[in-house]
Image 1 (cartoon, rainbow, N blue to C red):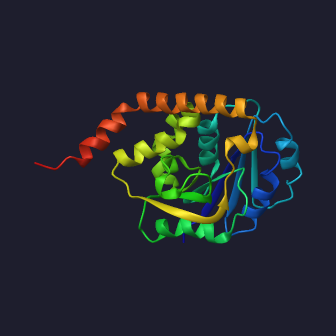
Image 2: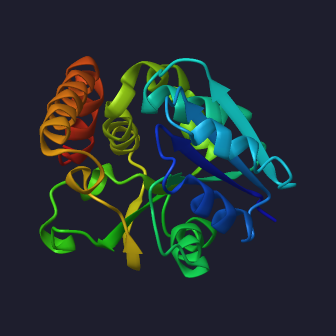
Image 3: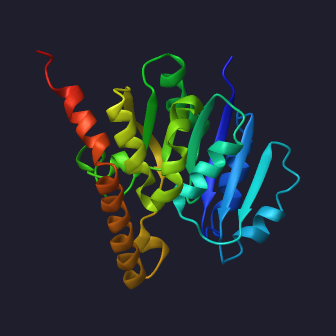
Length: 227
C-alpha cells in the first residue's frame, strides 16, 4: 500500500499557515512536512505552537532560499512513496481535493497530477498558468533525479518539474479542485509589491527554461513521428 507525505512550503504566511497545516494533518497523510523558507513574519512562531501534532515534521530554514530549495528539502525528508505539494495560503481545503490529486497516481492514470483551484480570477480552461500550480502529486522516485536542479530553480521550480516530466514522456493529468480558493498576489500584498514579485518570478521562470533547454529539446524530439 502506498504511503503519503504532504509537503507545505511557507514564506511569510502567518495569516493562513495554521489552518492549512491543521487541515492537512487531519486527513489521511502519513506525515506532514512544513518547510519554513526563512519567513520574517510570525510563521515560525505559529509553527512552534503546532509542535504537538504527531504527524508533523517542521523544518526551518534560517534564510530565504526560494521555493525550489524548500520543496527539494521537503522531498529529501519525506519517507513516503507519494508526495503531495500543497500551497500554504489556501482556504477551503477538503479531503476530496487530496483524493483528486492522489487517485490518478494510484490507479496508473498519471505520473503527475496538477490541481487547479477554481476560485481564481482566470477561467480554468483559459488559464495559461495552470501548469504552474503549487498543488501537485508525484511519486518520490520520479522526482528525485532533479532534486539538485530544483534547489537552484527558486520560483522556476514548477517549470523545471513540468519540463522534466515532458522530456521523460511521463503522463500528466490536470484536475479542477472545486471550491478551493487560492488568493492572488494583489489580494496578499500591495499592488507595487505584487508587480515587483511578478517580475522577479517571471525572470526566474525564464532563467529556468534557458538553463534547461536540453529538456525542451528532448520533449520536442519525443513528440516527433518515428521514421
